Image (cartoon, rainbow, N blue to C red; front, side):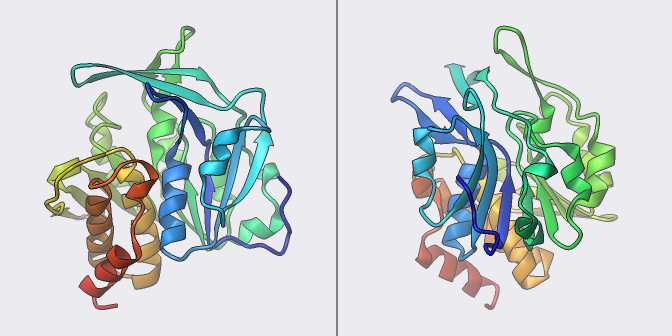
Length: 284
């Protein structure tokens, strides 16, 4: 859909929305989808640059206020997760188009916060040096995937990390993202000005320069963990921008991500009361 050049997002997401195949039918997925719900809840004007079928009905499940530039593709990126016990096998049946800087309207280049959020290695590396003023967060899981001929998704080494991460403010990744190569924890910490490794209910670790600090997760009864990492990353990017203080921003993000797993689907986005509580915790 076309957009007015007058619109400048506060928070710009770059990445594919996904059609997730589930036993209950198709569902909207992707970091940009969960992140957009979080950013809107936290008062941001949100824009998404993505690629999907031009008539993709799942786009209607994004918040109504989100402005979307959809680069039309033959197929929407489609994933299915198959489980045997707790072991997951992931398949990618379709992949939409690669996103490049030329697809972004000039006004959108003025976004204050940019979130590079690939799900299927779809974001061009040129975006890392494209923005002159906005602060960049990257959730790199989608750069560490490869699709086999039968659709099976395998994890791989991200060969361009050394070219990309020095240009961002914030890198957020999970233990699951790097389980194929745990040494990436220290690689990402070395390359990124701020790197955060999340460990689900065990909290996580923050790296900033030579400093390392662990943080705890809040104790809650888990209902639906999907999207919690996206809530955490988006909330942290926003809180860091507002507070300019990393430990306080981590507290905000950890609280909102923890609360998110008490609900399922996009209901995991922070509620007004949760957001008020999170800010109050850090003196805002």
